Length: 179
Image (cartoon, rainbow, N blue to C red; front, side):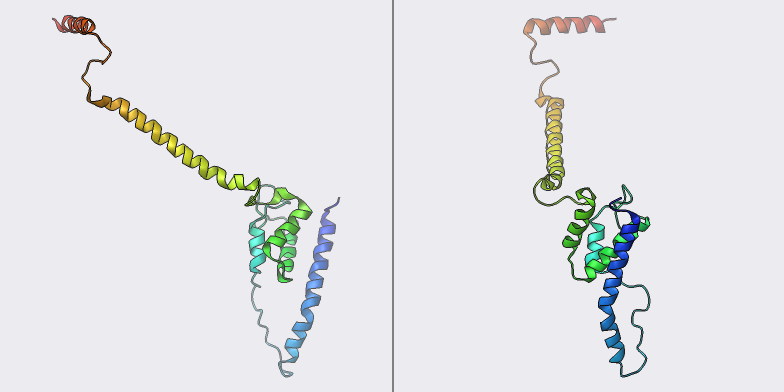
């Protein structure tokens, strides 16, 4: 019940009203500076999302849609969280601060990318190191197989046969080939 939808909606509405209240004086001042003429609406069309908000949203998983990134989660709660992130970005917060804000409220498991320090560094370095080691093992195995197949230019008989064994083998081959 701590993060109920009604509480989140109320919090989001409060943040949105606060942002509008902060922007209202600048909007009325812009209309008055037009010399009493009708102010031209320069925000026609959709509002461009703040770059810090876009970066933060793309680096978070959705707490409301397991398996989805926050940017594509269709739930209303995710839309409210994206709007809240937009308001936070427009208020001057950087993407890293916004991400930490979200993680403080919903938990570390919603971070989409591991940290580049501490234990998270293993997640960044592990795959390239494993790939490098895997390629090395494949190269060594292939080199060993090629050496065995080529046989180093030796004759058809195995190098481990004694003279008596070679005579016996030759005799067996002659008997086999005889009509």
